[in-house]
Image 1: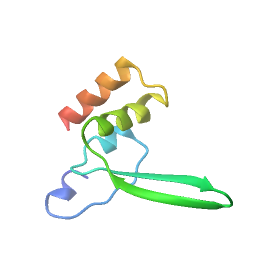
Image 2: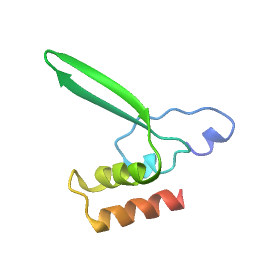
Image 3: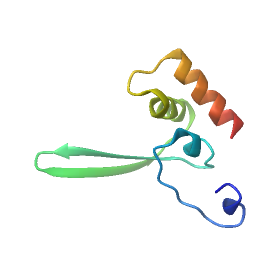
Length: 78
């Protein structure tokens, strides 16, 4: 995918932190129940919020120093 992105626009939706860490730009897609309706939102994410999101993808809702460090390493290596 990284090679494809060199001369094309690639949009990937993933739950895999290993794939997400390789992106040039990140968008957080979320949905929530509002009464009987489901609302979806999409927002850009960067910096510490991105690190936290990748860490959440790695280890679940409860972030640890280990998952945060791993997320920073993955994002730095991408």
